Structures are given as C-alpha cells and as structure tokens.
Length: 147
Image 1 (cartoon, rainbow, N blue to C red):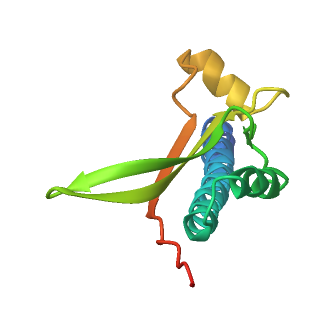
Image 2: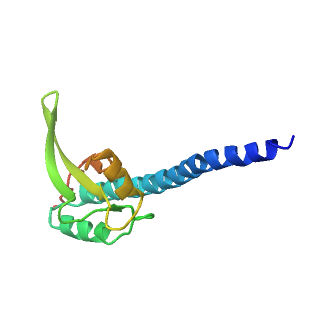
C-alpha cells in the first residue's frame, strides 16, 4: 500500500508529456484548419466577384480587397502578389467552350517565429508538406449588352 502512491506519481510523470502534446497538437491543428477555411472562403468569394465582373480590370481591385483580410490564427502567410491569381480560362466540354474564372491561392506555413510550425519543419524536413494550395474555377456569367 505504501508504494502505490509513488507508482501513481511515476505513471503521471510518464503520461503528462504525451497528454500535453496531444492537447497542443489538437489546438494547433484547429488553428491551421481555421486558416484553411478562411483562405478557402477568400478564394470562393473572389471567384464569385470576378465571375460577375464584365472586364478583367477589377481583378486587381478584388485581389487588393481580399489581400487586406487577416487570417484567424495567422499561422499561414500569403502574399497577393505571388500567391493569389485570378485569371480567365476556357474549358471545353463536349465541343462547347465556356469562359470561366479561375482563382488560385497559395499559402506557406509561417516560420517567422518560434512555433510548432518551425518544430514540425525541423523534425520532418519537408518545406511544402504543410503548405496550402486552393484553386476555384467558377463559370463566368455572360455580359448582358443592352441596345
């Protein structure tokens, strides 16, 4: 009976680091997932705005508008000049061609500060393993010309 108290302390000391790792891993994954959802929403919304515009000049305005938005957890860094593209693409299906707008967002996991991201990159050694690539293609609505 006397040694059971010592046994419980040893078990607690062995399990506590694993428990803390699981808790922090879950929190970090949730933060990364919230950034992914925000970037996904930016891509979808900007594709929708670009699809209803009649010319390509507002594309820069759309990029500027969504480039000013912050991510919820700020674990990812993305630059509108490099990782945010809006372009017109033509898709042919059964001999019919249609104009579409394609939005691509690329974001890298931020390693500016000492964080779990830096620890994961040091352990795994992969630079692009945790990077995000989102691509939305949306049908461009035909312009209605009134006479």
